[in-house]
Image (cartoon, rainbow, N blue to C red; front, side, top):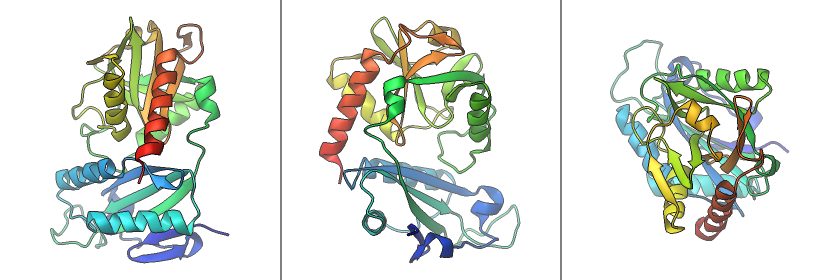
Length: 283
């Protein structure tokens, strides 16, 4: 049985779902997206994702496709129709359909597409083993704080990592780590959690915000500042956060093992807290 997806007002089997060849998301990457985790059949941090979606739309002068309650109802309907217990709901908003031109009309009707993906989030084998990452130059556009579908370079970064025998890549600009290809990056050194401060260089991760809040509540020390690849390779431990991986330990950077080469205690504890709180607060 195929998945049921949502396209511009209709719930359809995935093989019947279509968008126009003139959709600007397809032609121009003129689109933004959000991915919301589902655990125990409920949505994690939904309002945070909607707030970031509103910000992304505002930065691109793109109208919202629907209000909060409508989008929540669509998410829940897709979770129900696909009997999704654990996984993800992907939502994409493009500027809409028009004949190909770099300029666009200000009153275009946005396109809205959503689909689900089944994925083991809480019991992930990667969390027990930890990730191996490499560092690569950050060659993306300058507005990484807007969650657009311009994901070609992060995709190439994933492939660079795979070719190097690693799991992922951390991107480096002006001598400092920005973020991972699809996640925020952290190191732990001297008992301090260090992660890059927010700005146009990185995406304001919804999972990042929650994890830092939980860390502060657990009396963990946090420094929000840039760090170098050398600092990362010399760290006691490291991890990444995202809606698709929660808190994921990093055990190796550029071939250098961190600590004893196993997931560290800070990452493990934050992952436990995040999963526990997500189960409690999901809607």
